[in-house]
Length: 287
Image 1 (cartoon, one colour):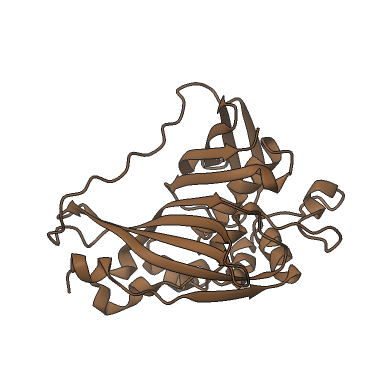
Image 2 (cartoon, helix red, strand yellow):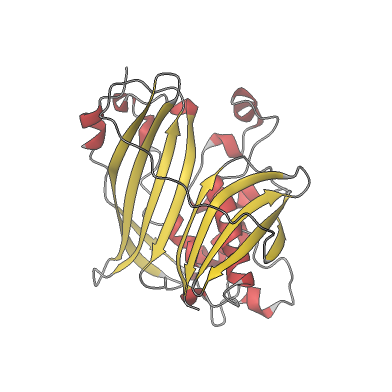
């Protein structure tokens, strides 16, 4: 079954309520590598209940509607889908425990052409359940490699943020654990690709890969450390494009360019293989 543009554009994605505790906030932080140095008091603020704070990128795992593109009626060959881009705009810092509501809809479907695939863009708002205050807005794309040429209206995909053509101003190396994917999946993304060796091999990988949003969270940690002095309320927006998978246990180097006050560019590479895994990154923050 091919993609039907209007049907997919009008797809009703269930509203999701998430109740999370301090334990969930600490688990998320541990999953993206916080606490690797047990005497680093700045990292401990995210993994220890005393004066606990939530990481800015934790909004990516709250109000998540699941991988609804697996429904055959979408027309998407979900086994060939890849997480293409992710952004999070923070309107109000997350509390370390709370009750939030996620509302997700399909913003656009881009037909790149036969043999070139399709892009499905989703937007999600996360609001406080009690007050209705908007906490963050998330936009993501799924690259459906096998589903181009369905005849959708012509649309140009948004141009990626350009990385400066000069050496980065600073960089931050952060290790991941061999069990990082096993930790991170407990946040709610139980895709077998990240845990089952046979599923990983069938997808073309020699072992399970790290969740893309875990890599995104590691980059968020690097930016929080390298630009915002571990002050989460300073981060306003973070966006990037996924370019290659990370294997648990690899070290991720985040290269950062200070473009202007309150604005920086970044990309991430795996140091051992010298491969860029997150590209075209943009950070907006309170200077």
